[in-house]
Amino acid sequence: MCGRYSLAQTVDRLAAAFDLDEDEIPVMPPRYNIAPTQPVPVVRASGGSAMDLLHWGLIPSWSKDPEIGSRMINARAETLHEKPSFRAAFRRRRCLIPADGFYEWQRLERKKQPYYFCRNDHQPFAFAGLWEHWESADGEIESCTIVTTAANDLLKSIHDRMPVILQPEDYDLWLDPQVQETDRLQHLLFPDEDSPFIRYPVSTKVNRPQNDDPDCIEAIELEEADGSAGQVNKTAPTNSV
Image (cartoon, rainbow, N blue to C red; front, side, top):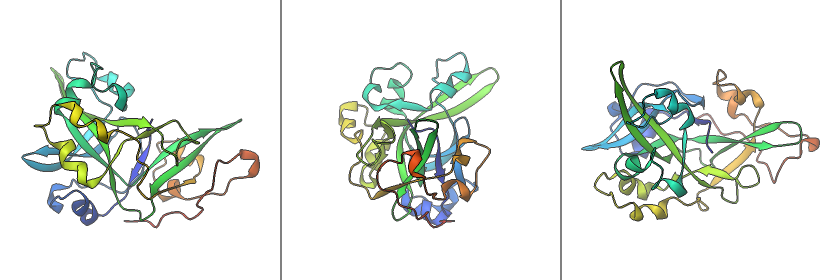
């Protein structure tokens, strides 16, 4: 799954990464611990492309209760085409969810140890996402979910799932609302083995959504008794803000 991530990039970097004008990017502070149900930036096709803030946790248009979104933060790539909550959005309402890192937790004997995953050049990237429009007599909500797939080699010793990370050359295809034959998109939904990602353990401070500062992505050293998995890069990324 993907339950927390970060986005602490300057406006000019985001504009360059997603081919946007700087004035198309909403004003938002650096985020180091983005959590479900919060507003998150997404890129959608709208004539050209545009970045908007949507509720993280997809609310299907037919739902009677918007609280369902808290259980829809992720969508499994393997079943997008058949699940009633996701299949319409998979055909017509796909989006990019910008990030510059994400967290997963390794289950140890006495606790869960969080790890941070990011590109080794600390540049932004995009999760594959879906979005929906929900409305009732009380108002309207636009919401999104992150598509997940099986873990790649870097991640599998920590967790068995990971977000689908799209390559920049595939952004246009994923966003294109004219592409409704989902068979054309299936090859994008496999684990990314080639991108230059690194991982390292971080403090359990990230467990609390209220903690949202650079300390969340600071590397820590694990004691042997904690049973750390694999080789750890103990250098935290440079703050990109």
